[in-house]
Length: 512
Image 1 (cartoon, one colour):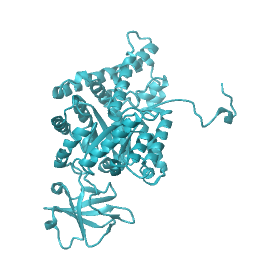
Image 2 (cartoon, one colour):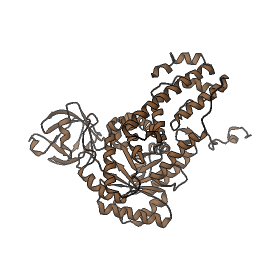
Image 3 (tube, rainbow, N blue to C red):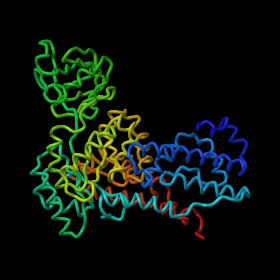
Image 4 (cartoon, rainbow, N blue to C red):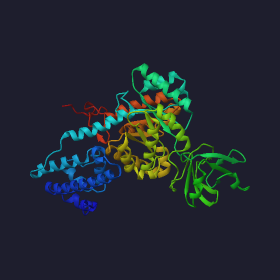
């Protein structure tokens, strides 16, 4: 079925000619039947590949949401609003029920018999599924706000009891251990410290362990002196120093040198979370020459261990590195939840599930958080979600650091919204991550933009804060923001509670 059948000739025609309730009913019924038909077909296709989809309400609803969003109903929405009806802008968690309820209301207005309202249990069960998943991944609420707080543990949390206690007291319900840093002994000590403190406090806190994944980084830097890179400067990345030339002023190597053979002139390469933007000027066997086109006016240092992103290049790296395989031996025995960095394809999820099942003696599969960090992962997100929920609990982290560099900063706001919509449709919880209140956690004072970003994060099931000297203070500030925003929003739905900023007495009016 085609989206175009639901489009009206032009917006002006809608504004001038209000549709009758009978005409709207016909259009909504046509839309409902199309969405249901396409959703059932999609579900059958998923079931052929994975099996058991019929028993997963989130899978059917995700299929229905994708079918709905392949239609352009933006011109239909004002006509629905004219009647004070739902415009389907908050139907993510229960798509077919929303369409059925809308058709039933229009039928009553139009005097057309035979339309039933869906049972309210459908909507309630969808909301309950998301809340249950939130509890499984991030633990019960520690503060009055709906959204949970995850914290990336610093190394000192392995020995600093007071630090861990302060984080738990401030509202941490999920502690993240980044396996790209420290070692197995430290990870065990961090987890033991958290579990001892939550037991003493009589609360709960999940342990999420993040496998490092195939993160490309600068391995070595060779230059005559410590330098800053400015726009117009040249860098050479080589497979090894045998490919360097005497005339090369700045030389670097990376930990995945096989990537070099996939680069061609014109490709963009970003270094250090997008602080250095470069463009491939020339490429030959074992070496690539780059020109810097983006850097601060005072320049940027090029250092080992800094991340490297290739947004124009589809990388075909193994989803699990040899280090990841070794780390999984430890992770399977410690973690409550596993974070999957740089997951991109459904087969990546099958691989990780298989590796965890080899190592874990648990009766149920370990929950997995899929970190969405690349354009490939964004493109494959529906298939990733379906693959995930078919074999065990799954959640999604909007890993905005690498994602912003990979898709472009201008697209980040749009994509993070779409990811949240898709996940709500599948009843899958979302983590809002990367640089949340970074300035406050580092310096003790948030920027205005950070405060607004923290407010936006309230729509996710969990918000992640990174380590810093003012981490507990940042958590308390975040909790305050989340609680305030809970008064005004539930996911995308505005809550019209009373406004307290403008008392009627101050307006020259009296309350009734």
